[in-house]
Amino acid sequence: MSEQNLQGSLINSELIASLAARTALETPGVLRLEPTIKGFLASLGPAALANFHISGSQDGSYRHDGVVARINDGTATVHLDIATDIAYTALSVAESVQERVRENICHTGLNPGPVHVHILTIEASPGSIPR
Amino acid sequence: MALEDTRRLGCGRSIDQIWAGMDQPPTSHEEDCELCQAAKARMQKIKEATVALRESDLHNPEMTLPAERTNSIMALARAEARRSKRLVLRGTEYGTVEISEQALSSLIRLAAAAIPGIHSRRCRIEVQSDAEMGSTHLTINLRVATASGIDIPATVEGLRQKINKAIPAGVGIDAGTVNITVEDLYDV
Amino acid sequence: MNDSNPACDADTDEGSIVARAQDGDLAAFEHLVHTYQDRLFRLAYRMLNDRTDAEDVVQETLTASWRALPMLSDVKAFGGWIYRLATNKCLDLLRKRSARAETITDPAEIHSTLDDGATRAPLEADPVASAEWAAQQDGLTTVLNTLPAVQRACWLLREIHGRSYAEIGVTLKINPTTVRGTLARARRRIAEGMSQWR
Image 1 (cartoon, chains in turn orange, cyan, red):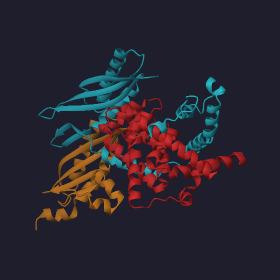
Image 2 (cartoon, chains in turn blue, brown, purple):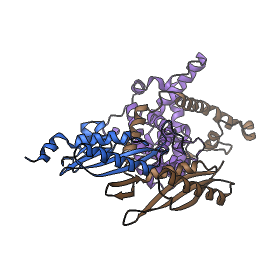
Image 3 (tube, rainbow over the protein chains, first blue to last red):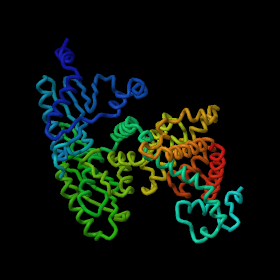
Image 4 (tube, rainbow over the protein chains, first blue to last red):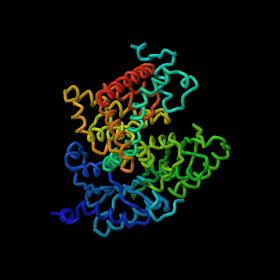
């Protein structure tokens, strides 16, 4: 039994997803993670989801509103869908999310793979002054 | 059938004409014409009931769509909106950064909202990324309506400058090519 | 509403709001939903006499409009277009109902299905005048329910919602002259019905 197996059972994709989500939300300029179609359908109940098959959902990846994480050969890959605050420069926010998420993945002992960030909307936060 | 539907009174006025003038003061013809007066009186009750129904439905709080229906409509729209086109801003070994066309166009709309006399309309954005993914060139095609009577070239130029500032500040890249088309005028 | 989005300025022309919604701007679409949802509900309710069916029609209409918006070529035609979608959904539903032979024709039964509040007179109104008013209104809604669906649609669109003859013609796939004829027939039936009812 290799170490990787042990690692896989301790640190699964769900944990990485939640770590990435938390890290993103703590990054200045990130307002929230954005729910995807699947998240929306899940909120409607199992009947809606039954008709909606996501290919690749059985590959060990974990999806939650706005985040997908996958572990492959000890490397974690993350996709994040975010809404950013208009008071910040969106690209800088996204790059800072990438950096922080990769850093936190390192702390788990896994190798940080690519962190893909998709900026879905740019909005004013309740406290910010629009440019 | 058609003849019957455009029935006329003995004085030559059609029922349609009389109906159309129900809520107006009598015309000089109607003041003298008994046929018109009688027809008007006959239709008065329908007119009154129609107006009463229109007004009571309009002000009846029960005759509105419940909030949960509105929420369902918006929730579905929001979920489907996520399919909008994605533009790649950066691609490195650390991962890609993409932005939805909508996020960009909302910044452009906000810039346009700051310019008096312009209402932004449709916005199409294309992006050409360099092979090394180091540089990104945007082409923004924005259609607008302008207030009638304004100096269009000066206003459009003001909008262009505003967009040229707003994109670097909000997104972190140059606005690239900004094409603005005035497609309509609106009355102030 | 999202404050960062300028779509909801009171003075923005509807054409611009429609154009933004066509681009997928949610705040603009929300503005249109709020502008039209109650009008469409009032139409659908008077067409269908069933609260749930009317709500379904409005929800389906506005959802369908979100999907089909990008195909709308003239932004200024939105109002007519959304009324057309809603009216035709109502007519389809009525056709299905009559195919199932479930149409209610007894005025008393229609009355029991009417929402209480729908025909209620304003409280502050003079009692005599408001009784008269309610009676007329009840008479009108009862007669309206006995009209053939297309005549009813025609009457509601023109007399309650103020839509143009040309637009009603497009909605019902008849020419404006036929719209006038249909309205005239509806008016005669209402006159007859109301005098019987009183």
